[in-house]
Amino acid sequence: MFIEQTVNEGMKISSNESDGVPPFSLTLSQRGLKLNREKTNTLQVNVGLLCNQTCRHCHLSAGPGHKENMEAEIVNEVISYAQRGQFETIDITGGAPELNPNIGKLIEEVFPLASKIMLRSNLSALNDGKRDHLINLLKSFRVVIVASFPSLNELQADSQRGSGIFQISIDALRKLNDIGYGRDESGLEINLVSNPTGAFLPPPQVGMEKRFRSVLKEKWGIVFNNLYNFANVPLGRFRHWLKKSGNFHKYMERLYSSFNPCAVDGVMCRTLVSVSWDGYLYDCDFNLARGIFMGGRKIHVSEMPGPPEPDSHIATSDHCYTCTAGVGFT
Image 1 (cartoon, one colour):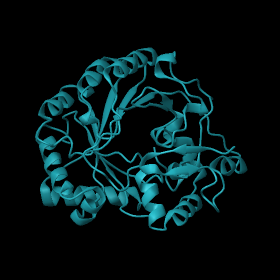
Image 2: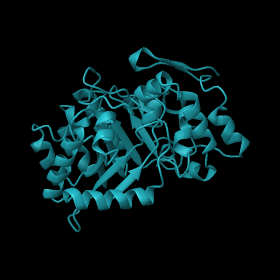
Image 3: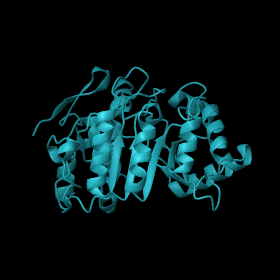
Image 4: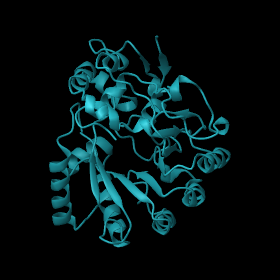
């Protein structure tokens, strides 16, 4: 089946684009593997593409010029779905979710409905001088912050995320530490996410976490709970950069050659459903970026009675190699 979707920045992508790399579904079948759902326990909510940064590695091509932002009516539909679905975790992402004017209402309303609420933050949007009320809200509801912090090198971080972002992020981490985030026995969890700054795969996570913990503590007195070290997904602005720099096919081959059958069991799409700013459902945020609806069918959150059924089909494409390269992407 040939699939073509229009994505941001005027680029078109298609299922036969990754010459030399077999379709992900074929790789699964050749190894006797199936990618179907288990019990869905996480509702991921993408509240929009509006962001204060234009990160080179962004799979959504999010940025300041975007108008896609979840409106109050859709927020209410998502809250109703969270009630019906009885999810264990609500995972709020973007763009920069802090920039959505309805973010406070969403957090407050889903708080009683799930045992964990997560907010994915780029730190700079949270630390723009206008979000102290949101920081206090996150603390009050013990929201887990998952913060993008790609590199300990200021020049590398700024080249990937924008000039001055590194220092703003350091200041944000200090501010969050000051109110208890990352501190032992505070109950306030902050996890960092590191991504490579180029067309290569990340180093082993254990060693990377040890280094981040040591350097951040020694230089800036910063503490955190966990570090997650993920490969960049070849979608959106990162896919555009790979193509422009001549690295796309080499990167896809690297992902394919690093395919780990054992990682298939732990991919997040088995237990997660993602809802976009306009209310449609996807198997994950990467399929959302690609425009591939949940199970290949266009379904609005208002039409969904509950979580997707166990053993139901998960739509796949070439970007799925990212989640199964090396130790995987959970």
